[in-house]
Structures are given as C-alpha cells and as structure tokens.
Length: 418
Image (cartoon, rainbow, N blue to C red):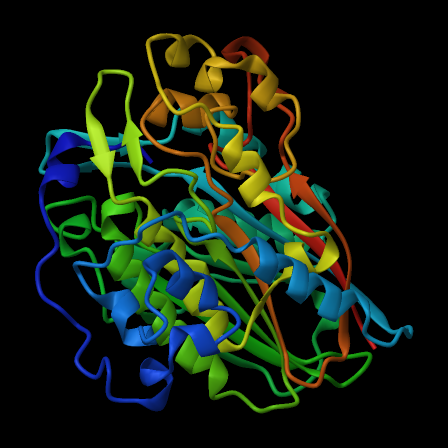
C-alpha cells in the first residue's frame, strides 16, 4: 500500500489494552520463556516480564536476535518421530488488490492493479494449494470473482458474511472442497486495537481475522484456520503487539487435540539489523527493533511455531546482516544499492527487490519476512515437509509490461498430519 503523508503523520488514539497485565501470561519473566528470552538479553534485564514488551517506551540495547530460538525450534521439530499421513499444501499471499480514495482527494493504490486483478484468480488457484490465505482482497467484486473462480477449480471460498466487515478487512480463505468434513464453523472479527486513522479519515480499513474450522474428511482431525492482516508501518508496533496478543489468546483457548494453521500479512518481521533506518533523503527513522516483538508474542500467546522455520532454519538474521547501513540515491535505481541482494529470494516477502513494492516504498524501510505461516500442534502430530515462496518471478502483462503479481511475495509450506 502507498504511504500517503496524511496517514503517516496522524496518530492513533485510544488504548484498547484494558486487561493488559492482569493475566498470568502477561506476568511471566522473559528470561524464563524460550520464545521471548532473546528480548531479555537485548534489554539487559533478566527481570523484565512479558508486559514490559508492551511499554510505549520500550527500548533495546542491541538487536533482539532470534537465531538460537530458530535453531532450537527447528531441531525440536525435525527430531520428532517419523510417520506417514495426510499431506496438505498451504499458501499465504497478500494479493495487493487495493485502490481507494479517501477525503475525496487522496488515494492509496498498489501499482498496476487492473492488469493484476485480471490474472489474480488464475494464478492463485492455478498454484494448486490445498489451503489459501489471502489478504488485500478489499473490494466485493474482487472477492466474488475469486470465489467464483475458486469454486470452479474445486475450492470452497469464504470472505466473511458481512459486506462492511469484508470491505474493512479484505480477507479471503479458500480450502480444497475434498478436505472438508464435518463440524464446520466460520466466524470473523476485528481487533480491539486499531490504528483508527486508517479507518477515518483514511480509506475505511480496519484490521481483523477470519476463523474457519472443520474436521478433515480423510483423517477426522479438527483443523482451525485463521487468516489475518495486521496494522502496517513500523511506528505502529504496539498496535500489532496488542493484536497478536488478542489472536494468540483466542487460539490458546482451542481444544488441545486441534491442529491450527494461521496465515497472513503481519506487517513486521522477526529481525532488523539496526534500530535506525536512514532513508535516501537523509531522514532518520528510529525504533525498528520494537517491531520484532510481534512474531515472538504471537508464538508465545498462541503456542504457535513459525512453519517456515520448522522446515529449514530461518535466515532472517543472516539476510538482514547483508543489508547496507546507509542509503543514497542509488537505492532508487537498484534495490538497497546492491543488485546481488536480489539474486536469492528465500526469505523476504516484502522487499525492494519486488518492482511493485519498490514503486511504493523504495529506500524507506528494511525488508522483512512479514507474510507468515504458523502451526499450532499441541499433540505434535504434524510434520513440516517443504517450503517455498510464491509468485516471485515477474509475469508478462501484455503491453502493460513485466511485473510481479503483487507487491508482496507469498509463502508456501507442505505439512503432513500423521
């Protein structure tokens, strides 16, 4: 999405964190929680608690580094007993179908939207995934077109039951029809924490989630799917932290024998190499390290694992270390001023290496693996088999030129339920 100056400068108002600090999960010591211990180390405070990660004055002495957490979680998974079962392929993808005016003057739009929307359904369902989490399908016409194409391809498609809620959240879930057994439940909601300016005077957006559950037709396993899209922009780190706390607690309340899959655009990543971003105009943007609390807090509250990291140890720290510390005009010509940084696309889903993303965000922020897939599996019956990235290669759009299907790349994982 483009970054209109009006939306960036206006601040969110209100604080929906009414019960923050009142439950046991909020009061745990960071150093005692494996998924959060790297924050205690980065703060230099072994007595800090989870609720401290929501403090508006949160600061770190050094970059919170999840490298050891990635290794530990990956090893714990790949050493689980083997077996065979039902394989399910999953994809999350921000479709970038956004074009709206607000205040009758300003406009937010992902580039080349008309050409891309004509190809979107064929490309998404042509990928052949069993479960598809889509974000930024804001308009009802796009949602209906995707639903019609999905159903023709053997999917059940759901984008919420209320027109207003869908137009505010832009989420869509698609599941291969043959997977769905009994006990279906569908519900949609919006987070208590919102960047209110994004709804008004902004382009009528509010952040929320879709929840679709059913038993798998083949195995009878109870499967819960959550599709979500969190508030954007690095300065809204606390809004995102509150949103994932709400979502995580919702997931934690599900039955122990359920399998949970979560997909979405979370608008922040696990790791940023520096706390300060200096853009090509020399303007400084501090406070990036606080954004790394989001994925760890979702993992903590929801009991979730980063699915990509279960397949192969995530490379966020390694890739982040390669991003140059300074920017200049060359960053508008070549992503990050170094063409070699785009030769391997194995981590970042939001990056200047994507030509559509670069048109909106060139030299304004760190790249991030912000489009994530998560697994909740308390009975440890799921194995992550493979992972990949979706729609990385640019497509030819006739006379319009060659560019990506969206300003984000997708993430995909194949799991096996034993």
